[in-house]
Length: 115
Image (cartoon, rainbow, N blue to C red):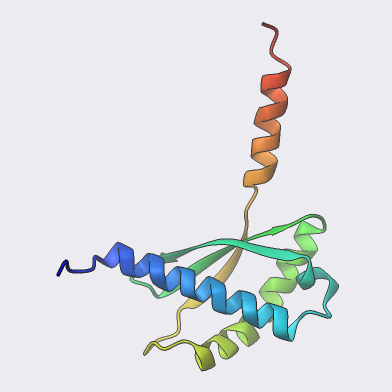
């Protein structure tokens, strides 16, 4: 049997945290207009799995959404502690994912190239 690597374990933990946080946001903050418009699009584990960055996308009010997510992070982490089956609960940080905007900008630039 192949031994599981740390990076593989980190990816699994980050993915599990992302899924659980999405459930928490949906269940506890569905009436919050800013939070209900958020999509969690990825997660990365850092610092020996002590920290998890959760990447989100929002259609508008990005700064207000980021501020609101920062405000509820402690509540979300408390709920996460109730659901996760680990000895330690990682710190979480929400980070805006601008991949879609960058992809649109690249497509726009490519379309404007004279051939």
